[in-house]
Length: 189
Length: 189
DNA sequence: CAGAGTGATGACACATGATGTCATCACCTA
DNA sequence: TAGGTGATGACATCATGTGTCATCACTCTG
Image 1 (cartoon, each protein chain N blue to C red):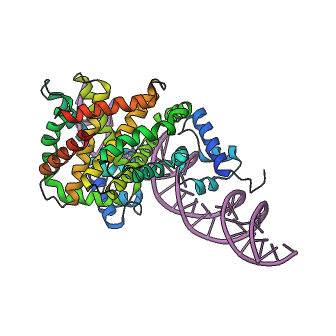
Image 2: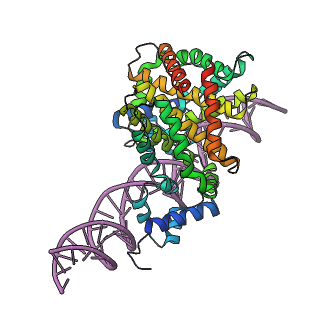
Image 3: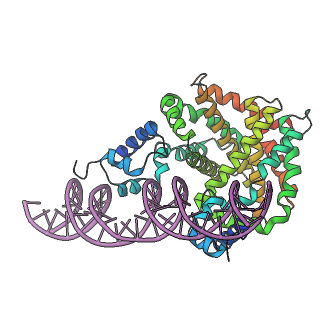
């Protein structure tokens, strides 16, 4: 159990997830996590800015993936076309085969408002990233902001519905349904 | 300076706002706030669930106002028609004459991610309230969720743009522009 | 008008979250 | 093999947030 046992971050993540699932997020203290991981409290906060962040460590790469997709999309596509294409392309490989993990994670998050807040911040960040890339493609500020917001809304609504329906039908179908309803809803007025 | 000096909550709000503006949110401690208000730290947390909440005390009533509007809208209106009508009706009287206060508040919020998180939670709550009222009017889950999300998106984007433009043009015009661009963006694909 | 009840506040203790600082150890490299 | 580098341990410390009980102001009732 000496020092320099690599994988400290992974051990902390695993221990935290286990304890959150066992006793809930609020009832789990950082010392409990670090005890299970064989580390000290101080080390936890060297790897994660705060207690909530450990639940989002696995999703760190998403903004970069999404930004890359938007940047690499054919220049001729309009902002919303990029968004639709992106939702259909990126979400399935990212989530389809992680249903159990995502459901467990969502169950933990549902019982703590603070975690919900953090999730919203991650989504807002994703929206900002998309908006920035859309502007880089030539979209004006307002169009970029709205298309980015719509992307994140469809992303989140679809994922939520898919998880609540236990993964049936497939995520791609849920996304398409959400996009269709969005089209009719926003086209109404 | 004895007890029972009514208006404790107001004094706490005022003292907090002043200190946040003077020294920043993170640099202001709750004991500093309560010292200025002539109260104890414990009393602060009896009035506000946490340090952030004091900045949102003035916006507490918005969900109820919005919910009432949606509930009272003509039953014949489609969800998105209710949303559009609501945005045009509710936002101006709520914000138009509070430009200075809103800008100050936004400046404080811009320098702290935690405050930004809390604002997102308030917006998410507003979206949930709108979605619930739309479902109560007969809208299906997906339509209600999307229309509510669009309402909050337009609300937030418009308010942000209006504040960043120093209140010129009028909020109503900004809302209309945002709605127009939303229509074209979401109608594209 | 006196006394009981009610609700807000004070006072105190305490757990937890989060950060600064310095020592220490493992691993890598010259 | 000596030194450098980076991660961790150990310790101190502050701020946030909560539980608990006493105390005071105000109100209601007889």
